[in-house]
Amino acid sequence: MPVNPSATPLAAANMARTSELDRAQYLRALVREHFSSVWRFLRCLGFEDHVVDDAAQDLFFVVARRVDDIVPGRELAFLLGAALKIATKLRHKRAREVPIEDFSVAVEETTATPETLLDEERARRLLYRLVSEIDERFRVVFVLYELEGMTMPEISEVLDVPMGTVASRLRSARDAFRVRLERHRACTRNEKNK
Amino acid sequence: MTKGPIRLIHEDPGFARLVAASKNYVPSEQIDKALVLVTETARSSRPTWRRCLVPGLAVSAAIVALGATSAVVRMNAAIPVSKSAPRAVVATPAPGVPATALAETPVTVSVEDLASTTVPVSSATSLKSRREAAAKARPEPRVRGVRGHDVAPLSPKDDVTKNDVTVPTEQSRPAPAAFSEELALVAAARAAIEAGDGPSSMRAVQQHKERFPSGMFAEEIEAIRVEALAASGKRAEAHAAAERFLATNAKSPYAARVRSLLDSTLP
Image: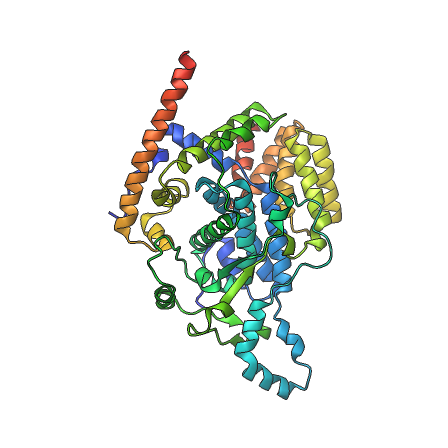
């Protein structure tokens, strides 16, 4: 099996994944390093909380049995691609769409939370709402580039689309997003000025 | 062309703040669950056909050689059904999800979907051509058999249904009975610190160090300990602990949080 030795703990753990204990350690390193990214990725794509949670758990359950399929150094790309597939299937099974308004409901429900945490929570929910308003065709590229910091060649590989397509989708997504962000800011300004 | 436009976080500070806020949030409970899940799964994914090798070694070797392919199929298909033990106390179902939703039939994800990194964005690509593309793109994965002997991988000509990995629902994933005690302690420590109760959190942290000195959640507990120290006003200790944590756990999901504590506990 081709191995790419490098300094990261994850890569080092790759080299000795065959024994059960090492396999468990490798998988835990995978969870610690990438779970948040997967979770955030799915959330930004507009999947509902419960779909995100279940899809993320299912993903790592499957990954735990498919450790040998992961190419060292390409873990995140693998995980995000698989997560998207799993979440999409889960959502179709449940056939439920959360209206955009529901994003704001949860914030009011959080009680006894320090003000800073509440602000952060509001910021998070705003981000998810704005991103979810981007056309579905362009959303994934936007999230991978702007939020996950992937390069365009990486995105091209994860999504299996040509670079030109990635570039044009990114352009459309950024334009649409900027409009929405400005609209939101204008609304907020108007509210404050009233 | 391949470089791409300047990222929005560099162009728009407001947007950068939104992104930072989303990265500061760590889905801790979900991560803990996943840690237990992968550990349990790693332990229980020993090839089940190993137990069929009852006769002498020579016969066993023959069985291994002849039965390799079908055994792999059986091994792949045999996802452990949940043990009779109930799920860990800390696992909470998502709010608002009716009970019936959790008892659904499992979602089936094809192994080959996962082996390649393709996402079916354009459904025009047929399954066959995606398989061919995947096969060309990277070497076929080797499946490890008993004691590390490589077992022949399934060929693309095999019936795709044999390759399907049934993804269980919440109910039928392996029950994390072995770690529920440690998990409960971590959850208690976390709940306490999130409620701002430094002392209670510290007590739970100390209990964990006593009862689970080489526990799975050492990293998580240490992050909570740093917060508990900071919350209890022990700034110098918190700062030192934060530095130590970041030195050894730079890629932790809690690194950002601990780093912010570093700033707030400057001597």
